[in-house]
Structure formats: structure tokens, C-alpha cells
Image (cartoon, rainbow, N blue to C red; front, side, top):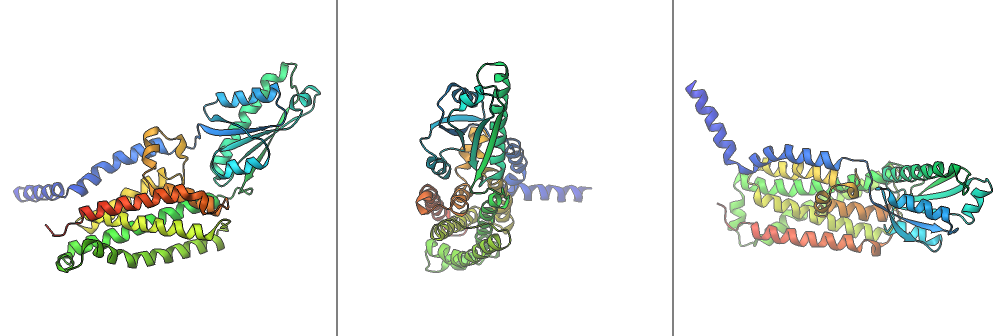
Amino acid sequence: MSSLAAFVKKEFHHILRDRWTLMILLATPIIMLILIGFAMTTEVKGTTFMVLDLSQDAASRSIIESMSQSTYFTFGGYLNDEESIDQVLRRGESGLVLVFPARFTATGVQGGQLHIAVITDGSDPNTAKTLTNYASAIITRWARKQGGAASPSGLVEVETRFLYNPAMKGAYNFVPGVLGMILLLICAMMTSVSIAREKETGTMEILLASPMRPAAIILAKTIPYFVLSCLNLVTSLFMAMSVLGVPVRGSWFALVIVSLLYIVVGLLMGVMISTIANSQLVALLISGMGMMLPVMLLSGMMFPVESMPLLLRIISHLIPTRWYVSAMRKIMIKGLSIGSIVTELAVLALMGIVVLVISLRKFKPRME
């Protein structure tokens, strides 16, 4: 029994000595519970809606007020013409647009059927269906309340239109997200494990004894994986277009630029992870398990970020995949050019610079 106790004591010392592994093992269940508990929701709240009101009467204003009072929608203003509908949806200024035809109230008074068009962005089919269901329910509830009134007495017919993805194909939504997740995780894992392996086997001592500067060592380690990641990008896009039928409607130049920048950010994140991981196991846990849940749940690829608590929304801004998915949806599904993703490019470039500076500062010129 004394020998068993000695071995158990030795194992405890070994576990407690590896701080990063211990931290990951103890913190992972807490992080998973918080993320899954708060992030996994299909509710969509606070969506901005805009209105093209050709009638400008009491009934249309009453419906707009009913929508505004709901926790699901926020009134964003009026549109002047039909051309503005496509513009506000493409730019993301509005998640849903209501269109009231001319003589809206007069049609109801005369016993006719009221028609309201609900137009939304179909590039995210799940969110689009949820928003149209919310809007339809609010309008139907309004119509029932008006049933006994002298104003509109006719039934309301809600016509829904899904722009950019009228067939509501699910692949249009998840392909940009899955592409972003694959590229980031593979890039981070490849570089982090590669440099951690050098430390574990002792060959990092040889590299540090060479006249090469840390920046040159990092560059030399990332270039081969950059080439491999570019091949992964090409094959993934080919499969998405040929097998899943997801188009690239926008600028190929914009798609290539944002993808290459995203790959660089992923590789640099792997380098940063390797500066704090002394073994391949720790590097794999951080870059794989540690990054997968935040990327899946907080990037907007599966669940709407806007409906999450404020703290998670703030954290989601620090995840590169959120910006990449946003840019890819604009390019692939909405058919926009590089001018529409300037914000995403700027944020990814800033992330790359910050991660590079941290990596260079933490990259030890001598092994401990």
C-alpha cells in the first residue's frame, strides 16, 4: 500500500506541475457549460426592421407600432423606394423589411384581403425563417384584435420573400462557417504542435543557437503551413461549389484576399499558443478543444450572436471566425465586392498584428 500511495502522490505532483494541462482540465467544463447554456439559442431578439410604407395610413402605423413593442424587433426607419430594400439588406443595416401597399386601410374597409410583404435576408435560412415567423405572428395577432373594429376587417395575407437564397438551402449558411472553422483550427493546430514538438524533442535549442532571429524562425515555421492551408482553401471551395452547390456571386479578388489574411491570422494564433505550450499535448488541447467551442458557438455560424448576453457578444468580437464568416457570406451569397468587407479586413489585420507582437514578445530567445 505504501508503494501505491507513493505512485499516486507522484502522479498528483506530475499533474499539478503542468499548470496548463491542469487549467484546461478544470476550466473546460465551466467554459462549456457557460457557452452552451447561453450561446445555444435559436431565439433572435432586437432585430432591426425597416418599412416601405406606400399607404401611410393608421393601420400600417399600428402594425409598425406592434412590431416595435415586441422584444424581437427594433424599428429602424422608413425606406423611400423598392431599390432601397436590397441595399439595406445587403449592407446588414436591417434584418427584415415590411412593405405595405397603397390604399392599405381602404382595402380592409371595403372587405378585401390585406397584403403585407415581409422581406428578409435568406443567406442565413434559420434566422430568416425565425424572423418571418415572428413577424407573421405579430401581424396575425394585430389582425385578430382589429376583427371587431370598423377599420380593416379583412384577413391579412403575409407574403414572405427570402433574398439571396430563395430556395432556403442550408448549405448557403453553414458552408462559410464550416470553412472558417476548418481553416482556423487546422492552421492553429499545425503551427502550435510543430513548434511545441521542437521544444519537446529538444531541437528548439539548435534553432535558438543559430544566428536566426525569432521573427525569422517564426516565418520559416509558418510558410510551409501557409502553402498547405492555401491548398485546403482551394479544395474546400471546390467541394462547396461542385458538390454542395454554393455559389460565389461576389468578387473572387475579395474572397482570396480575406481568406489569405484569415489563414495568416490562424497560423499566428498557433505560434502564440506554442509560446505558452511546452508539449504537443498542451498545444493540441489549447488549439483544438480550447478553440473549437468558442469558434462554433460565438462566430455566428450556428446561432445568432445578437441574441446572446452582452458579455458573450463582446467576447465574440475577439474571435476571427466571426469576421471571416461575415465577409464570406457577403461575398459568396450576397454577391458583394471588396468595398463591403473593409471592416472585416481591418479587424482581421489588426488581430494578426496584435497576435504577432504577442508571439514575438513571448518567444523566448533561450530555453529554460
